[in-house]
Structure formats: structure tokens, C-alpha cells
Length: 157
Image 1 (tube, rainbow, N blue to C red):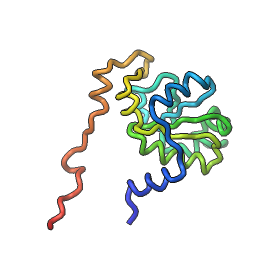
Image 2: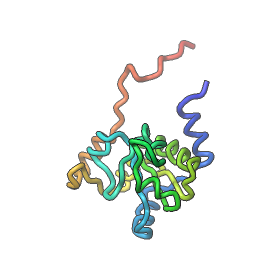
Image 3: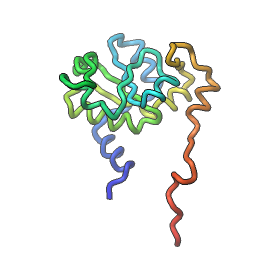
Image 4: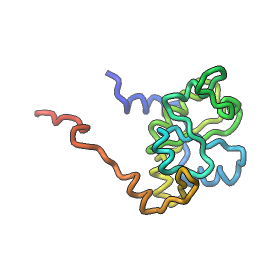
């Protein structure tokens, strides 16, 4: 049986990753860089990297193509641009970057460690109104919240 972690490992065999400090340099060095946040809209509205674009992972494939309700023209036209895909932890972004490569995006990478790592590197976030997010609020937002019923059952030895 294939597991989520197996899918991520498979995608990472084809996807390049960059660290948060590399992204800081890429943002400074490439004004045409497209920063693509593939989290859900509620996550994106709560906090995001300034200048990022939100296209949820669930509609990514359609957003990358013409003639769909989900089409995002700037994204469709970005096949030749440098694209950095971000999510909360770097897992969904790895899957999304792999998908985008298969769709013909030539220069797409995933942010290793995701926005958690961006936060750990003390880089800024903004909310849906463009207001800065306080570091303490970002810290609380990125705390793991796995409930007991979401944990794997204990195996009897």
C-alpha cells in the first residue's frame, strides 16, 4: 500500500528544494519570481509571505491550464518563470512542484520546511488585509495540532 510519505518521497526524487534563506535571496535577486502558496484559502488568509499568490492544491492542475473556471492566467503564463511553491511544511508543495513540472513548468522548486521554516528563520508574514502578523501569532499558528483520533493506532507486539 502506498502511503502519503511514500508519495512525497517519490515526488522529491524529481523536485528541487530550496531553504528559507535561499528564498530570501531569490526574492531579492529575481523580481519576476512567482511565489505560489498552495495552501487552502483560510490558511493563506491567516498568514502568508508578502507578494505570494494563492492557488489551492485541490485546483492546481486546472489553474495551470486555459479554459477552466479555475484558470489563473498569471500562473498559466508562468511556465518559463522561476516559481517557488510553498505550503505549511514543504510536503504539499513538493507534490505540487512535481505536478507542475509534469505540466511543463521548467523552473519550479519547493520550499523545504515550508512556511514553518520561513517562520523559524524569522521572516515576515502578512494577513489577508496586508497587515503584518506578529511573530507570536505565527508561532502559535504553526504549532502541530494532531488530535488523538488522528494518531495511528498502537500496534500490539
